[in-house]
Length: 100
Image (cartoon, rainbow, N blue to C red):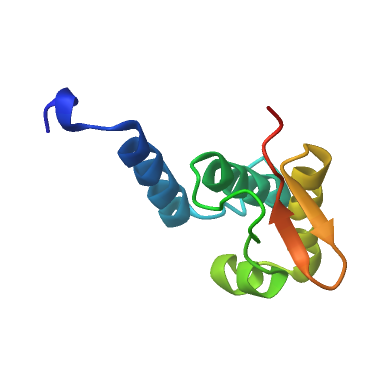
């Protein structure tokens, strides 16, 4: 495909799809929760999850990536500590509003 037909959002979408296909490498040196945090961070930055909207629940992440609940929690906490999501008890994690 010629470069003139490739748009930034198409590239971001391709990256998100690639990361979903790659998944989690349980044998990598990078801890699994950090791998999941990186996947979610990329999806947030690509605009797949809009500001103010929820990211997938712990249960969904557990099923989608075959991980334990605590592993998914740790990944979401990393994103919270980075200011990318806010956690609302009983409701889940939501993408933080932009910090312009």
